Image 1 (tube, helix red, strand yellow):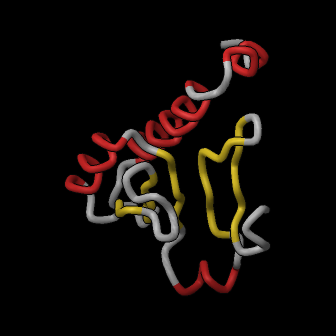
Image 2 (tube, helix red, strand yellow):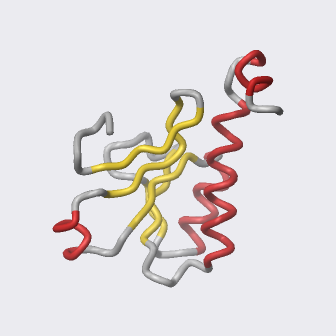
Length: 103
């Protein structure tokens, strides 16, 4: 929880690929969301396709999307975004670190 108790950060080899809110009060006041790393071109396409996907607040909006999990983005699309975020981070790890992951 490098950003404090309000956010849960998901990492691979110390590199963040996702963030979700952990604050129960905030979750009652807004839809649950996830912040995911994204290829810049695909990030813009997703934002143009789904109103629930926006540039992530307090993140580099070129590389990070915020996805409101309000049911308007299909579950399979969300899973694909999570997989792509993870893969993007792994791809940028040093070869030695990628090898430890089995890839």
